[in-house]
Length: 365
Image (cartoon, rainbow, N blue to C red; front, side, top):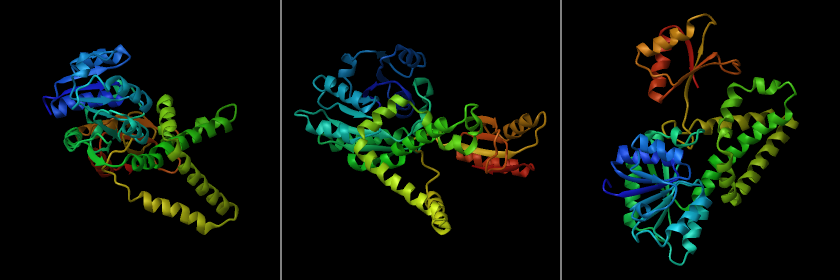
């Protein structure tokens, strides 16, 4: 793997993080980057993540052993057309798109398709751009690999090895299975989050009372609505069949709940929330999803000078790195008005123990 020549097309969050991970974790030293904006290229050259960069395809790209196309699906298909007759026959083309059926179907219908493996690293962030990327973005994240008709055992084994070396968990799955799963756990939730935000926007009073109070839980459950609108337009249109069916199912669940509420059916309402809680509690807390998890502690504190410094110093003395601290204006259903964000679950456990031992009332959320 170390001797492979790699090209990354699209040096945004995913492409930039891939470039960093391939160099630092896999040991690949020959990395070409293609990006429409020179700003990301300049930044990647400055921190020595890539060997060279350009806004146009060139001979370095055509000589690559592996090409990661880190663009929206429809743009990726355009690049496949530009590359198919110029790259080496054994060059592995792969993408990182959030939908797989459209691009795999396109490859399988080509008369002389290139060697292609669909890819989807299920990790990300609300932030975008090369600057938002980091080497460990893929740590413990599932990385879906979807074979096409041109995928060979060697190419799949090579890609699996690369995925493992960047810290991710490879999952081989059919394109249609992938799109149904991501439709349920990612695409429709994004639509719902944006719908909730728009609901408040439309229903809010002129003086913005709802916006003022939209802290805590509401802000957390709509966090993903801050993602790139352009990216999500592309995702929705490339997976509209699966999303349409899932939305129909979701609407039926809402209708059933509304009927239970109108009929004062307390048992049905209780079961609605209980079944969701029980199933939600079985989810793994050790695997990364499409968005970087947040490890937060709510601390109940007295509003007095120096209290924030006191907590920061206490955690610092115990070698706990604090990512962020926020004073909350709305406690909602949780006790506490200071939210401390930690970098990982281990830090969360240690910080919680330290705070409790020092007399603070602290809750992990």
